[in-house]
Length: 424
Image (tube, rainbow, N blue to C red):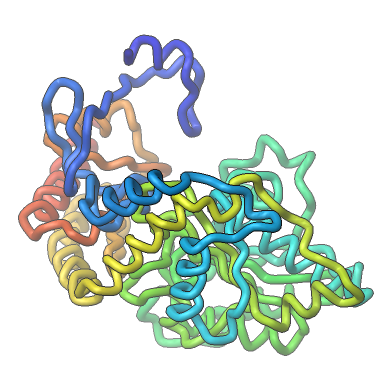
C-alpha cells in the first residue's frame, strides 16, 4: 500500500516523487497512532491541531453513528436541521455577544474566503467599492485557497509560486513584541502608519490572534491585538480574527482574542471544532456586518454543497459538549507548566535560538532550518510523531495527554535536536 501511495497519491506540500518513506497508520486511540508494523507513536501534533480529545473517542463515535442512522447529509439551501441549529446556539453562546450570525463551511480556508467576501460586500453594498484591499501581516498564514493565500505572508510564505495571479493586498510588519513584553507604542507604529496611509482602500484587517501559526509559530502581546482593534475602529475598517488554529482552548483561553479582551467583526473557526473527526468550519459575523452586506436587498454570495453537513455538525456538538464539560482550562494550565519546565532545557543547545510556550503550544526555534529526512525517522524511532517545519520543532498535543506521555514528547524533542546538532 505504501508503494502505491508513493507512486500515485499527493500529500501536503510534497513532491509527487517523495524522497521520504511514508508511515502507514492502521488505527489510533487516545494520544497514540498505531502503525502497520505494530509500533505506537505518541501524536504531538493533534493531527495538525484538531484532535483535542485524542483519537477514537467514545462520545464522538456515538454521535457520528447516531447521526449516520438518521442522515449523513442534506443540502442547506431552503432546508435546515437540528444539528446545525444546536451547533449555532452553542457557538453563539461561547463567543462574544456581538457575534450574532454564523456561516458554516467545510474547511478553515473556506471560512477565510467567506470572511473576505463579507468584508468586501459590507463596504461595496454601501457604495464604498474602493475598499477592496485587505491589510494582513507578514509571517501570517490563513489557508491555501486563492483568497486565503492572498493574505498569507507574501515573501517567506509557502504561496510565492502564485504571486502573479493573487489579489494584491497590503501588508504590515509582523508583531515584534513577545507575549510578556512590557508594552511600547513603537510595536504598533508600522501597522498604524500602514492603516492610516491606506485606510480608504482597506475593507478589513485579518490577523491570527496572539499566535501566528504556520507562518512561524510566533506568540505576541495581547496589547498588540487590543491596539489593532482600537485602530480599525478609528479608521472604519473591519477586523477579521482567524482562530482556526487557536480556537477551543489551545492558548489557555477558549478563544485567543479573550487574552486581549476584544471582539472581532468577523471570526473564523475550524480545525478543533469537531475534535478532528470531520472537516467543518464556520465564519461568525456581527449584526453590523450582516446588515451592511444586505443593504438594498443584497445577500452574501457564497454557498458550499456541504454547508452545515449534519454529520459534521452532530460530531461538533458532541465535541463541544465534551470540551465544555471537562476541566479543559486546568488541563491546559498543567500542560503549559510542564512544557515550560521541560522544553526550556533545549535552550542549553547551541543550535536552539528560543523556546516559546503558551497554553498547549510548545515551540523550539533553531538557528538553522530543519532536515526532515534526518528528524522524522529519529522521532519515529523514539516512539513519537512530531512534524517540524522551517526552523521550528513544535508540539500541540491533545488535551488529554498524560504527564508521562508529554514527558516522552519533550524528552524526545531534546534528544532529536541534540542529535541533529551533532550531525551538522
